[in-house]
Amino acid sequence: MFKYISKTLLSGFITLLPIILTIYLLYWLGISSEKVMGDALRYLLPENLYFPGLGMLTGIIIVFMVGLMMNAYLIRKLFSFGEQVLYRLPLIKPIYRAFRDFFDFFSPDKEGLGQVVSVNLNGMELVGFVTQEDEQRLPPSFRDRDSVLVYLPMSYMVGGYTLLVPRSDIRPLQMSRDEAMRFVLTAGITG
Image (cartoon, rainbow, N blue to C red; front, side):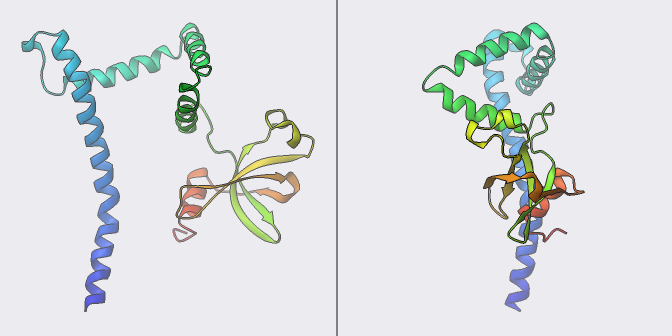
């Protein structure tokens, strides 16, 4: 009886938690943007022009406008110059670079994880993602080996291993990156 109740509660929890966390994240983003932009707008606009939600709407418009401006060659060059300055500042460089790399991973302009492959490791096959095929972008001691960098994510963890693997030990898999990541992170339980 208690086993059935606990199993049912766990099933409900697992079903509702992703939905609740997604809604809460969107709520938090909306409230945070309304607070930051709303305070600035209250300072700039007369009180009768401000209405609740204007801060969030203004934030969305600003983000969209910045995205549009990044399509302009001159703006991209200026932004790149600004980034180069940030990359030279001692305290800011490691923090900014970490954030930049993380968000570049999700950029629609970049591939993120590369091709899904199977890595043969002592007779075992591991699912991984090619992250670097160009030898010139590898450290000098890794060049001239006819190898690629492959990221092997770990199941149920935020982590993994990056291995330099000979091309002869990998083979492409017919899976999308999303399918492969879901497969690996759930240890194959999702099918």
